Length: 239
Image (cartoon, rainbow, N blue to C red):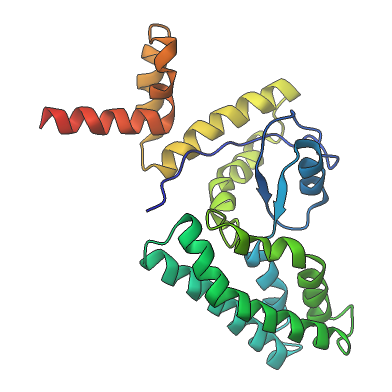
């Protein structure tokens, strides 16, 4: 089954995507303009989020119940396919193939329907706005079909970054660009620990106590995943 490698939080200073140049293979999110700038700056591929694509149709339930219900049911089937793939332990190329066989035909029907609906839906209505979103983001929303490693949405990332939104109410500002980057590094460690079901405090205390004497060639052992695997190995050997 898939194992999280770790999570990196980066600081986006403005909507121009002015962040450190780094190697990113993909950036998944909504239609926020800053993500497009990051892709351009870093050479990453933009991937859409079907949770955001679904949201507009959910909001259109009262004003356009029938088309909204059809769209929500279809998107629900896409998520059902993801659940099936997970139950079958399909990852990588196997998951890509499964999506191609089951999800791709559904999406072809969905977009044919969306194109027809767009001809009569009022653009400023909730349904019209939902249709505009999924049609404008068609390329990025379909991109998850191309790579089984990519999720259908970025809900996992948003859940992990919720601590930033909650904390922001308390401290409001980071203080400086350098402080923002330092906070992002700290968040990256904490969120990676959570993904690996490690208690962040236990990990950080152990690493901070050993980092000054730990061999540089074994620095991988101090990363959240490396630390987790090393501890698991030591535990099994002790037994």
